[in-house]
Image (cartoon, rainbow, N blue to C red; front, side):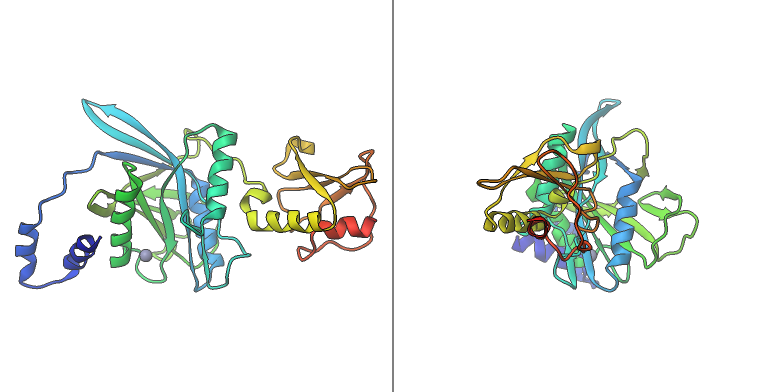
Length: 312
Ligand SMILES: [Zn+2]
């Protein structure tokens, strides 16, 4: 770890010792070639999160698949970046960063759900974060990229750096390692991709935006995207004497969550939430499956238990 840090610092020092230092360091073997395909909506999500963050730090994981490919006797990799986890509004202001580490409950929960629903061998391929200035990796990014490449054991570790200030839903094109918005290009609206492997990198890597040939991941249901909210909902229901169980079938097949609620001496009731919960109102159904009319307007500050209380 210490030697990596020293080497990383050495690269940035400009002076007469640079040539000697370079000669004394054994060159890293060239990494196997990798073709990186990126779902366009991943770049859109990163750009949207960058705009939403304002001046704050933001970032998240790059999730996808890696396959080996043999080209003319040479082994390469086809890397498909299929998804990311958007920083949640519930996170601490000033630092909405989704990581897969100790605080990575949301990303880990999303990765598990996507693996089980798609059957894809999804992996953590790298991370993205925003820069307020230059889109080049900082000394810290170089150190982190090499460390993560070594620790993850993955053949490819990607670092994507987002710079931009505007939310635009326009056609995008990939130009080498830069995915940018074609309609309104400026140096301020882009996501750049870099690759680290072992002790080399991060170096620029060309990406291809691929809307057709690689799978699109389904949207995350809210209880997967917001596990802390889901845990709070369950705690509050349990405190009210209700036993919630998750229904596997969701009416309409949308990515929401249906909960069956049981309480001693009462007929079971059902709560149906849509994918936009808590920003879209839930519905309470009686034992016969009929909607229970409720008078109070729904707001995201309310919880499911409030709905049950109101109907009791
Ligand atoms: Zn950085």
